[in-house]
Amino acid sequence: MPKSRKLEALQIRLNQIREQPDTEAAATGLREILESHQAIAIAQAARIIRDAHLQSLLPALRSSFERLLHNPVAADPNCLGKQAIIDALYRLDYPDFEPFLVGIRHRQLEPAWGGQVDTAAGLRAVSALGLVRVNYSEVLSELADLLADPELDARIGAVRACGYSEHPAAVPLLRLKAQLGDEAAVLGECFAALLRLAPESSLGLVGRALSQSSREISEAAALALGESRLLAALPILQQWWRSSQDRDLRQTGLLAIAMLRQAEATDFLLSLVAQATLPDMQAAVAALGIYTEDRELAAKIQALLDERA
Image 1: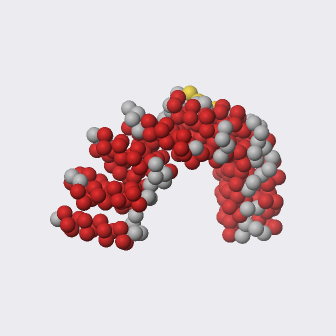
Image 2 (image 1 turned 180 degrees about the horizontal axis):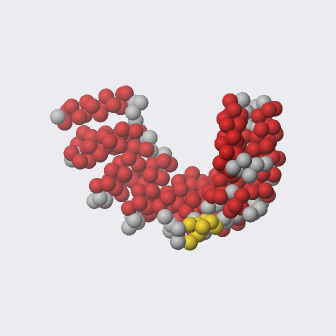
Image 3 (image 1 turned 120 degrees about the vertical axis):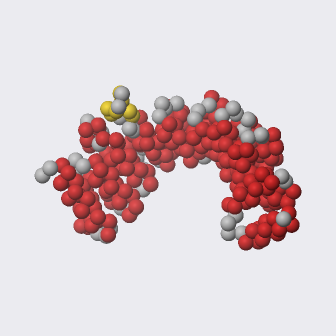
């Protein structure tokens, strides 16, 4: 049977299994698919096992993962099957660290226009979370290496795993990463993790990042401060907002203040609605738009707007 026809047949079978994944017939079908040579179908089977919490199929998942590591580019292009399997093992609390350790160290270079591309960055990121969950003894060393990974998705995964670990020793790693610099997506995760793990000592570091020459990094720092919901972040954000001349950054600053979801922050925004210049008043109203379910606040805003009119 041609490869496309085999995949089509497996897709039909997977659709049937999704309707009743917890039957013995479904378990048999999933095992057979995991033993197949169709990585796309294997990835879908792994997601079904994950979503249905089919613990009895964990050994079959691991066996399939190990098989896909042999000649991995041919067996599992784009690393779809291996990443889905590791994600299922992680979410189903698989207790053995070995597949996660293999995953965090795996690189898969595949042909691409003008050279090669590493398709295993997502696998390394999920494997990092798995190592944290199983409490692997050398997990911080593995995360330190992953923080220096050439691939953006892998570095983001490393930062998230550091935050997920809630380990005090992860804080120095994150502080070093934040100050050495990276792309805004990585630093935004870094700021958020630091404000969760060590809020008091991290406020100054994240506050200084507001003054970065990169607009993207400044915005990432502001939003991380807002997401922290720390009242102590309010004066930091207010000072940055007052000193900024960039209209977009000022809008981000007010949004971050609203995200604090503190009474003092809301009162400050309402004062801008009542008394600020027209652009700042409009920006404050837009920032308060995150409180769409608060009818009392909406009434206050409307009353202030009516007074101004």
